[in-house]
Length: 173
Image (cartoon, rainbow, N blue to C red; front, top):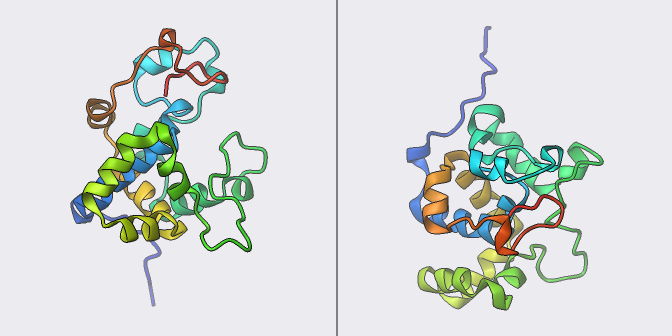
């Protein structure tokens, strides 16, 4: 019996629009763009390009959809020593295992929190953002359809001269 082992990735039109927007807000909240350039302007703004993480606009062409979930969850397990931070630390003994809710409650994330409050009840927002699977699935799906132009239309990128930059890469938040 000849069974194909080809993995079929989901088609972008099958994703729920609200889930994709939630993923965009999470990408902004986790500040992924600080290390991952998404256009040539960002790449050109960095003196030492060896500090850059892979370009997010290449995710769909370079990675497997199923693998991306595991990479977001535990990058150090898949590639020990990688510069990718562990954004979902072991939170044994805590009710929640995702820091996304705490992140969205931070004063600097008021605009992102307002988006969640506009689209979910407070209870649903808290439950979703504390659910690691929900958070990672939204980030993964958004990365799968990521278009830098759409992201920067929503969240304009400021230059490193604005002083709002990552000290490691020089990229603005």
